[in-house]
Image (cartoon, rainbow, N blue to C red; front, side, top):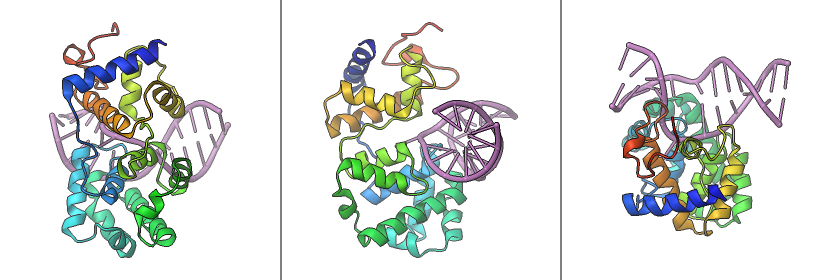
Length: 217
DNA sequence: TGCCAGGCCGGGT
DNA sequence: ACCCGGCATGGC
């Protein structure tokens, strides 16, 4: 119960203090997908450079990724790190979309959420957070995205152990909040915001955090 | 300067 | 089921 109180209270506090976050920072569903893959364990600023490089070289679209040489892709996305892996991941999902949906993302997104999630997870390079980010921010369907910051923030407030499972945390949020795409969208973005700015791995700046200091350290 | 970033995969036990 | 090493650049 304590956890649910925190989850509800934190949302109200954050939306009031920080306002709408206007997520995901992308111009199209495909750009959401590309960003979601490139940002795996990577600073968003590096991701932006990689995306700009792809666009600048005219190798950004699904069609371009399918036909481009994998070495060219990895060269362009170098700033985002793990470039060989990520080039392969972009290829994998682009080819999947071509083969099964004739490049039409809307066809993929028509699927029920459960099927969509399972299908995304079956693609090499797409794990739970990436799949859920795509479903929430590209397909705009209600799944809650859990990331490193979500876990760290709950943990810092003494609400979960560090080794909590992704699915358990996701369930916690889903059971607590109304099943609403807009709320899930906003909440995850808000958690990333305070995660980046206040809930650092070292040197937590809790004194300025809108959520306050709730854990003795 | 070192530590960290909006994870995921594959192999071993 | 759990644990671990590998992947890699750029920001602060």
